[in-house]
Length: 144
Ligand code: DQA
Image 1 (tube, rainbow, N blue to C red):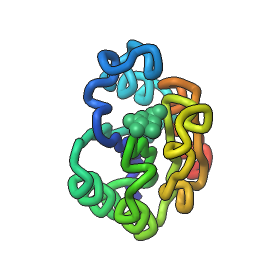
Image 2: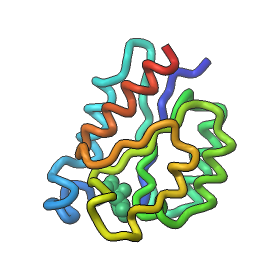
Image 3: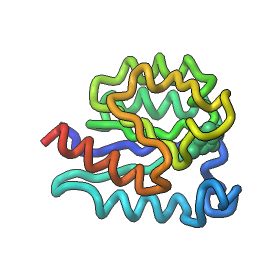
Image 4: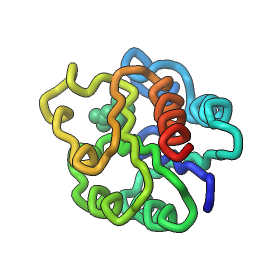
């Protein structure tokens, strides 16, 4: 069985570190990837991907059905809009952890609704980029 954890990131997260740093901080996605590599239990590895296009994220979730043992996903704005990403995740059998860098519940009302939470085995919000590491640790623990 594959021991690769997919870490999927939605729109605008390519600008992490530059975009609204007062909300999302100064760390970049490259920092997220490095930290997640360190957080992995022995025998596991991570593959971090980011796209501004919904269909590409869906294609990666389909690919994960054979190529990944678990998914960490920050769908960004698609969290609040995408039934298609929810449906794709419902076709994935392994653990799924949803991550938000900011505490979406402390923000605008439209960020309080998450389609992805209907599938996620765990949801982390407001821990900054540490949320990704916690999610990776959780997936490693669940899969043993
Ligand atoms: C986010 C929260 C979303 O509401 C927002 O659209 C993002 C990032 C977060 O990580 O806090 O782009 O998912």
